[in-house]
Structures are given as structure tokens and as C-alpha cells.
Amino acid sequence: MDVLNRKLPLIGIPFSDLSSIIQAGVLAPSADNQHCFELRAEGDGLLLFGTEAYLATPYHKKVLSLISFGAVVENMGIRAARLGYHADVLWYPDASRPALIAELRLGRSDPNQTALDGAISARHTNRSVIFRGPALADVDLANFRQLAKGIDGVTLHFFDNPKQRAELLHLIRIAEAERFNTQAMHADIFSAVRFDVGWHASAEVGLPPAALAVEPGARWAFTQLRHWSVMNRLRKIGFHHALALRAAYLPCRLAPHLGVLTTRLPIERGAPAVGRALERIWLEAETLGLAFQPFAGSALLSLAQYREVPAETAEALRRGWTNLTDETPLMVFRLGRAERPVIRTGRQRADSFLRN
Image 1 (spheres, rainbow, N blue to C red):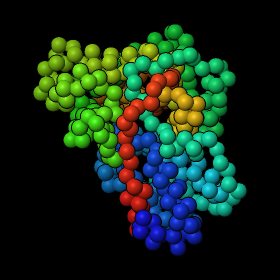
Image 2: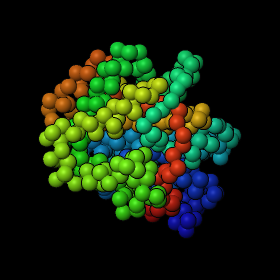
Image 3: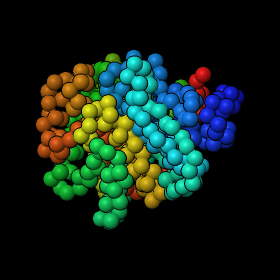
């Protein structure tokens, strides 16, 4: 924490408060448990920059990172409020610095403790195949919608009626099958899995296999699937469709609720806004003891700028989404009840994200 300590004179915030605010940001969700931001203390607050890895990453990963940055900022704002600061956020405050994503200006205010703050450290992805009911009451679903409604440019939809649900499940299955069918996307899936830590440990960076809810009897086979030479042979006999069934379609089909976050803003502003809404909803789910898992595939693969997606698949996804919403979908999630996972992904220390 020495790096944090050296920054304290710049913004006049006690060491313990600054550390807590940054740690809350680090605990936000990220694509494959790999944050690609850095923070700098400056003036009366914090600057959030995308790293060099973020700047060099393909378009679809940039979108995922922007969603994550929104969640990071949301967590820091929630924690700052508990500690007695109000956080004013400016997105892309300097067009001449493309790596500068957000500026958080912190000022003193009355402490405002909420249940969402208490859920920051407990929030996790639950990958259990089965999410149980009962379904939430209408008032609970309305409360989730209200959380998203407070963020400009974002809409939360619950597609729980049979026709809409069937359409969404179809899109989820198309996208997940393509992720195993295309070499570049297959590499995206498995490059983040930390097979080196084994099946009984967590990891601060990347996805430990133990957190993926792979059944013990399927672990050897799952390990082999990381090799494209194996997957390439299997996909030719349609095995990618079976994988899509297990990885996404069945878990979503069996969940009491399927939600989608859409935006009417341009992607560069809509993605962080969706990230903020996603985190609010996820934290609220945690306070209610609900299981939550996001699925970005069917939304991301429909984006025209995602060049690695075969044209036929992208067009099928775009057609399907027009039957559900006239906004841009960026995140799908399932919601229900399940036992908490024994092993979760870890996080790096807060000081590893602060730069001079």
C-alpha cells in the first residue's frame, strides 16, 4: 500500500478511505477476471485509464472492458458515499487522451450507507447449471428495473413470457455454439482459464477451473477441449451445439428469470452506462440472496463491428434482437436461486492498480 500512501497528499483523502474506494472498484466484475485499467490520484479525485492492453485489444473486448469500467466506477461511487464523499463522474473528460476513460471528483458529504455497499465484497458469478425458483414477485422485478432506470440511456428488460423467452434462448444458443465453432472465439474462451492452478484453488487473475462449475466427471474432457485441434474435429460433427446446450442454453432455460440490459446511447457511452446498471442489479441480487450469472455472447456477437463473427451468425442474431428490442443489447443475465460456489475468483491488491 506504499503506492497509495504516496498519493494521499494530492487529494487530501485519508489513506484508509482512498484504499477502501479503490478496493471497491477492484472488486467489480471484469471480463474473464482480468481488469485492464489503472487509477491515478489527481486534484480532488481519481482518474481511470485504460491500460495499453485495453488500447490494443479487439473491438469486442473493448466493449466488455467498457462495461467493466462502468461497474468499477459504480462500486467506487457506492463506497465513497458510505465513507462520506459524493462522486461526480465525467466520462471521457479529455478527447486528446484516448486512454482516459473517466474522472471521479470526490467532495465531502454526509455518509450514506446502503445495502449495496455491503454486497460489494460478496458479489460473485454463480455458474451452477440449475437456478431454482420460485419466481420473483412483480414488485421485486419492478425494483430491479428502477435501479437501472436511474442510469441515463439504459433499459432493463425481463423476457419471461414464453414467446420472448423462446426467442432469447434461441439467440443465446446460436451465439454460444458459434463461440466454440470459430477458432478466434474458442481461443478467447480458453485463454483466460487458469489450468495451471488446478481444480481446487482460486486465482487473482483469470478464471480458476474450480470456479467454472464443471462436473468432476467432465473435467478431463473439458481440459482437452482447450486445444483447437481437438475442438476443430469435434465441431465438424456438431459437438459445438452440444457444448452450447450445456454452457448457456440449459442454464438459461432452467432459470426463473432472464434479463437483458440495452442502451440507446452510442456504444462508447452506452457500454459504461450498462456496466453501472449491471453492477447495481448484481449487488441488489446479492443482498436478496439470489444467484446471478451474466452472458454477453448473444449481445456482443450481434454488433456489426465484431468482425470475427461469421456474417450468417451475426445477421441471425441481429434479426432476432429486433424482435425483442429497438435498442442495442449489451448484456444478458440469468437470475434465480442456487447454492453459493465453494471457490470464487480472487482479485489483485488495490495498490497494483494505482500509478504515478
